[in-house]
Image (cartoon, rainbow, N blue to C red; front, side, top):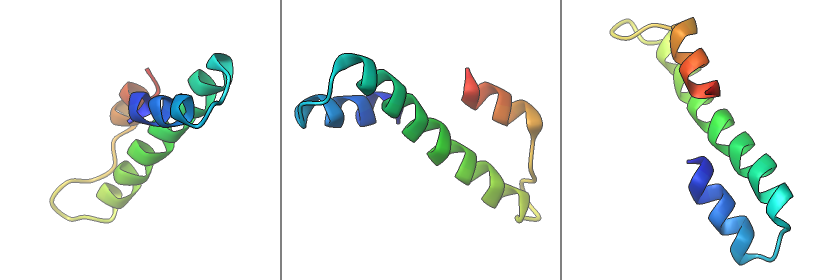
Length: 56
């Protein structure tokens, strides 16, 4: 997700430094949102290790 976000920012003319910052942020926010929704699911559940993996 971060790479897709960075490529979209590149297409729109954003600097490379900002592409990396905003692209990584977009990916982290998206995946963290999925993890929070998992926390409300009886089948899956929230996991701090998944949040850690998302941040890497």
